[in-house]
Length: 261
Image (tube, rainbow, N blue to C red; front, side):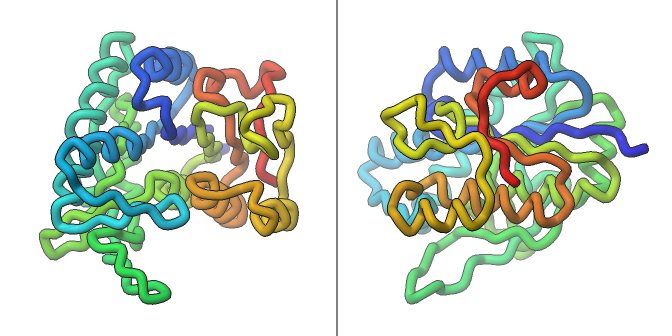
């Protein structure tokens, strides 16, 4: 029987809020068994980009990354945020190992080509996940904490969507583990109206997602999150859900969240 592996992706405004981030990390530490943490940090990267007077451009929740912005996202994601998260986990006796996709050649990506005339710059789409290396860290009793920076094998860094990394790592690890993928952020799950907490969608299939997106009820950062969630489910991940950041250890305790079906 395969061992259960939880892969948790944290993002949204949680990372930009020290209190919420600490609440999430407490819940993550309480999550029993084998686990991997994948984090974004887009709000913090945008904040630093604006401090440096850089042009910030987003297209359907995906960041356009020019020569200056790749430096910023690398410093913020793989440096500042990654090490703060690892330090916080270590303080709670969770033996975390901070990594990016570049380290130990964990994730090799291809530089995204022009799409509809749009040049995303130094943005990568994953091609290969080094599952043996990731498994070796887990076998040592470590909890990998992955920042969304990858490379293309030619010495260039690539900004890579953290939701996508969660998807490809989860689907790659299904060969060895029973994988449960959790997307965590500041809301209870997928909402029909983000202003109304009682509009939570408990179960969503692809047809319903397409309908909601066509009506403009799902947009921006939720689009890549759900696209990746459905891909992961189709590629053998046992369970995919979207849940509030401080409830990631509560999936079996009756708390509300969105199940991808």
